[in-house]
Length: 399
Image (cartoon, rainbow, N blue to C red):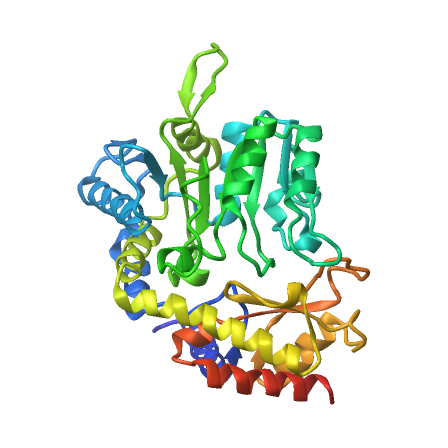
C-alpha cells in the first residue's frame, strides 16, 4: 500500500482486534470473501435508481448483482417473492428505519418504540434523533420488577396514543420479543408493525430466535452484528399491505418504502456493500451458520448465568439472545458503566457502557455495561470459554 500512514493504522487495528476479547454485541468478524467483495471493482460504479430502472448506463452487472442479493435475502428468511419485497440499498440501519417512517407516517405523526433505557435504539423515536424531532415519539418501557416488556400495559398505552407505527426490536433488550402479541397490539390501535431485527437477524436466520415475518408489516435489519456481514442494511415489506396516497388511492407500502429510500433519502447505492451483503447471505444459508447461531445463544446464556452466580445483577435475570446487560452500579457494586468499560478494556476485554432500566445516571456514564457473544463465537469459543470470561470480568471489576 502506497499510503503508509493508512497502512500502519490498518495493521495496528488488525493487531488490536486479534489480541482482545470482543464482547460488543453489535460487532463481529467478516470472512475474507466479504472483505473482498466490499473492496471490489463494484465500488467504481454509480448505480442511482433500482435494478432495471437506473439513471446511468453500464448497469448490466449491477442489475444482476442487486437482483441476486434480493433473491438471497428472501431465500435466507424463507420469504415468498409474491408476498414480500426487500430493499437492499440502505447504507446502514439508521437510514433504513428513517425510510420506513418517512414512507408510512406523516411528518409530525406518532411513532412508538422502546425507550432507550429499556433497550431501544436512537432511531426508535428518541428525542436526540431526527426520528424524535420530525415525528412525535411515544416510548414504552419494561416492567420495573421483571425488567421485561409488559404487553398489557403496552397495549393500553398504544390504544390511548394511536401511533402510526409501532417498533418492536431493540439494541439492549436481552429477551425474546413476543411478535404475536405485538401484532395484536398494532391491530388494536390501527398501527403498522415494524420489527427492527438488526441485533438478532442472524439468530433468526439460524433458527435460534423466533422469526418476526409471520406478524410484521415491515422488518428492518443491519447486515453486520449477528448476520456477520458488512455494515449495510435491508428493509423487508409485505406487498399486500397498502397505504392511501394523497389521491386517496391504495398504494403498496413496498412501493412507498422504495421511494423513501431513493430518491427520498439517498442517492446511488453502494454496490460494493451490496456485493458483500450478497456474499454474507449465501454464507448465512449454510448448516455451519445454523450451528453458529445456536452457539451464540448458548454462549451468551453461559455468560449471563455465570455472572449471576458471581453475584452480579443481570438485567431480566438472563438472556434469550446474544446479549447480556449487567447492572454495575445500582446493584450495590458502585461501579459506573464508564469505569467498568475502561477497567475491562485495560484488561483486554472490550464491551460498551450502557443505560439500564430505571437508569439514574447520564448516558455518557450510565449504570451498566452491555456484553455480547457473536464475535468471540465466530472465533470458536464455547461455553467453557465464556465461563472463564465471566470469571475474568468479575475479577477485573472487583479490584
